[in-house]
Length: 405
Image (cartoon, one colour):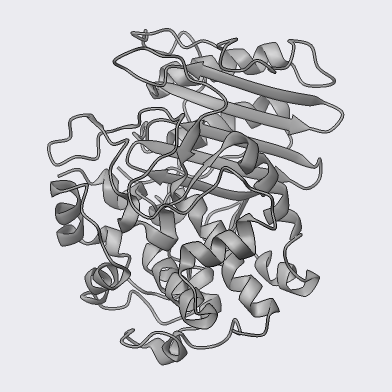
């Protein structure tokens, strides 16, 4: 059984299970990369509005090179990258392939499963309820969901900040086996929580940071209880519609709007690569089930970072980044901060994503991949994030620490 599932599926954030001795990411060097079966390329069909190789302050030819090099190093089939820095660049490229069988090129207009970026939407839904006076961040979870071990001492804030101490169900061996034995299975939130609650708490609420998907399953249930609506409906009406995100959705089942790339994973019982495109994401639910595209995520990066859907005081609460134990990296209410960039990453079998905003330059970065297979413990989205920001924003290089092998 692959242990990768427990490390990065839906949890996504590399600091979920970080090694205390993080190593440097591999250099994005063509010489270091193994030859690819299909050469990564920037497709003119995939990106009809791609920026020229000259830009105001950003060497886009160098960006092309480091992205292509990183694609070879990572072994990812394809990647979509969008980078927007006012007055400097508007860069959109699609590299590699969307389908290993047909070798169809990756396209910048494709939809992707975004894994744990879902948490940014769930957290925003919760904060909308805070603004409406229907919940308080320091309410205990027991007020909304019964049966949570120690629930009278765990607050909604601690759940959102990953400080509850609750065991993550995606770390449970029985859950991993159940899911990988039948990736089309539909899981209910209650079933997911049952896997988590078989384990003792890792620490007292508020004592420290530990990334747990269990926290966001509970917050999804809080949104439903306080709003009287299904989570997907509340997110659509209270988050997606006001933010004008027309291509972002919380799926009911395994539906996946076209166009989309095929997604490939080694998170399988035998460790062999599988096509996970149509695996049911119900197991991720409020922690990782959503779908979006480059255009919407560009918009969302700014909405999330600047708080346009929230009262200023509530946004201030969201951006209270607590230490994670790793230099340069903090976590707020469903949002991370790494070397100045704020946003979130996402991972589930077959796909990874990264959506970031750099307030100091009003810069936005979106990376979308059709694999989740790590490289020396690094999420491929982190490799791309580091390579791109090393060129575009050398004073703010995104680089989450490595997860343990």
